[in-house]
Image (cartoon, rainbow, N blue to C red):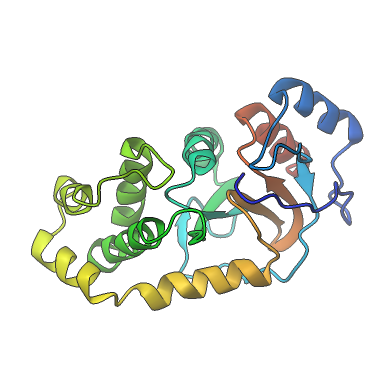
Length: 233
């Protein structure tokens, strides 16, 4: 996770994660390190107000699922790239039965990935504008698949991705060059700041549409699965 979030470990309302699961998760995960070399807790108490999930969100799965994972992510963050693979695996397992949904919200970190992360985030929103939710996910999946991360993705690849998923490249370029999606991305960033996000990836788990716990950083599949299984009981 980029830019350390120092939020303390949690026990939450009616959805507390047993200490044993946290310890087991840590054993599976090994040491998770951040930019300043500090270890971070597996789960964290959401420290702010989480905006409700709406029809305008980018969502995979049942919008009325008991468990919804709201992720704030930066397309040039290497930890986000890793966690994106994990979340796709989670959704292959849990999404088909409507138990879990995944919401992606933009949180490009300008100080770490100047220009490119914001531009790539806007590109995904252009894909959404031109092709809807399905094309958004196809686009963001390809961004994470090909980016070397840490501000190294060649921006010439952005229209190539648009073409590969069947979007009108002329309209895509027009959208991206106009910066019309900046307001959308900036609104996501503001939403994340209000929710207490200070680094990426950071995910807030909603249970019955209420914040129950958080996932700090790129926790591995086994750790995320353990949290979900406990919350689905």
